[in-house]
Length: 397
Ligand SMILES: Nc1ncnc2c1ncn2[C@@H]1O[C@H](COP(=O)(O)OP(=O)(O)O)[C@@H](O)[C@H]1O
Ligand SMILES: [Mg+2]
Image 1 (cartoon, rainbow, N blue to C red):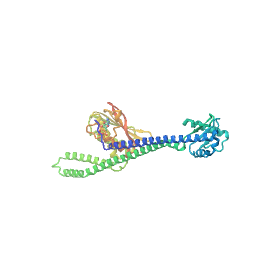
Image 2 (cartoon, rainbow, N blue to C red):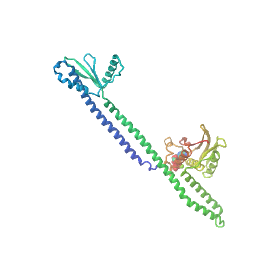
Image 3 (cartoon, rainbow, N blue to C red):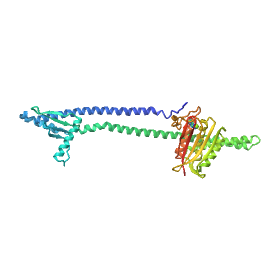
Image 4 (cartoon, helix red, strand yellow):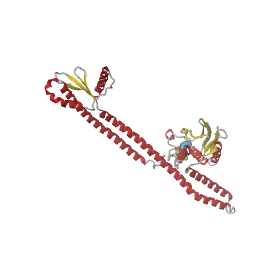
């Protein structure tokens, strides 16, 4: 059975709303500019038709007497200041061009080749318009989209790119603020717990002292047991208070720390779990750690291992040197293993397959290793029914 906290998932609805809005704005502007482009194209076509008619009028010899109208047509011809157009006369000669920049240093042959290339390009976009100049002769006007229209064509893509970039930025900002919030929850909870435990614990210590001072009334061995429990509580409190502040790292002998702590753990877990520690590290190998928190990590992983083996099996800790000045501590169990699908999930807060699990142990362990020690914690290998190896990697001094 899986359990999961929902406090961080409520924002999913918001995310979907934002994403839908972006999609709406994106497609909306795409459709709108598309309509605009179509309209402009129509207008430009109409304009070129007018332009062709003017050319026809100018070149048509059958109304030579109507010279008084040529000024209108030449006005129209001049007015086209944005649509590139080329008029090819019935003899297939380039007779007129508008809004086409031919480089100054071109020879007539180069210019001709340049314009013919332009005509080929134009033909790809628009059918040329016929120009009837009488006697059954006809020329052709080739044209292309104006600069404005061409730019407008790129606009939706530019807009979509900007929108995409914005949503990525928004997402990053969003998730980093979420992470910051999670951090505040962790740290706050830890500090508060440590703080609250302080008072009852000093009072417990005072009771222990009191009991010790009256050995007639209180059995010494019971007092010892209670004192051990109080000490254990003190360790827990110290852990909580160190995770709530920036922990101090100290150089420690990794072999000693791991051995001492596993000895301590071994006394606390089922005797049916065979625990062993091996090391390929140099005997004096130092690493910079916060001992309290590091032990907490080992404890969390080992407890999970014991759970996975249902209290019977083998728990092996092995330390090896890695290239790039790193030390690995491998913790291997012969438990039920983790399925491929769950390997990604075991470190997420709230993920637990246990009846009474909170699913925070590995989250905390990962946080301690990665954020406080700059190391790595991951499942090195796992096979369902066979067992699992967790690996802690820390920098060697
Ligand atoms: N050694 C292991 N073998 C198999 N499953 C494991 C092991 N360690 C962790 N898991 C899985 O990861 C889950 C999360 O572990 P943890 O964060 O410590 O939370 P909890 O112990 O409260 O369930 C466990 O419920 C278990 O399903
Ligand atoms: Mg656990």
